Length: 474
Image (cartoon, rainbow, N blue to C red; front, side, top):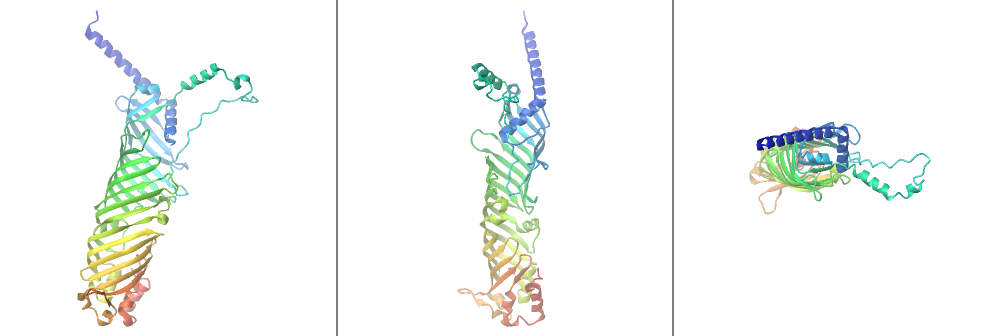
């Protein structure tokens, strides 16, 4: 009689040998070039992307490991995507039945270089799967040369069906997908950087739904827009369907402050239309300006407000429409040569260093311009109001008004003060003037209007005239 312990040992050993044989056979099958070709073909059918694979291995510890993954650029210059490794935790037995059931798919360190086409579209390097070749016909023979060919017998039809059933394609099911430390860089048609997303992590519990969008969450360590505006620690849920991307609840850091908003883009439509709306608070304006490449204004304070826009990502400067509001708290403007020199000329020291008690800007975007509805700067003794338009190239066409309270009025010479007009229902006096030139080299007629008949007199006025009205000023 078999003893229970001996029977258990034989059964266990048999199962172990069977498992090893299964693992060995599955590994050989997956690593074969035929299997890799089928996997590439199946991925092509599922995604329409020409995925290339260098090698595949399978083990009970690491599951399926695919190495040397690449998707070439559509024009053949480099790779659209490349990654060293992709790991999948999967069930081994379904592999022998032409099924890949993946419980967890981890994509490590993918790098994507996405470039616009010559027409300015963001297009995936898609490729249609090769159709099944038609049966060959001998030379000189018509496809219906024989009655048998014209009317195949039921046995031949049945045999054909059985032959097709013997060569099923791999079916792929993915239960969970994640990306670890990805890098996604977007360039315009001229090769200039548009948006960089680094240290990207993605988590999607159902990446290939039968019906409905792919959903998940994204974490981005750092991002930049045209290498001028920089974000940190972006968190957002996402929805993706038919090429359209929706980020509905973004949270990010911006120059020491916070940003919340949403962003939608459709790269499958000509010119890749987008729309966005964000709200921000506590942004260090000095840091924001410095990161954007610097500006002639030394400005400090915390910036808050909102911004919304829509347009074509392929031609954003030409198509963007939108608007917003900026509010600066604890603001200070100093050492701005334009205001500093005006302050010296008019004897108003507060123009050299303006400690702002209130600062707000309301603006709109459209027709390749920024329309300034109202730029309001209030210090203890001054009020500056600006409105008009500025082109994206920096040229200015603005109207402005400078108002003074009684304290500053008493400091001005009479020949200057007489050119200011009372503001109704206040104790302020004001003067209207224009600002033209460019953002980095503004010009104004404020001196001419403030000095009046004395404008042509004195070396000081001439120096200012050369510096600002002559276009040599900052």
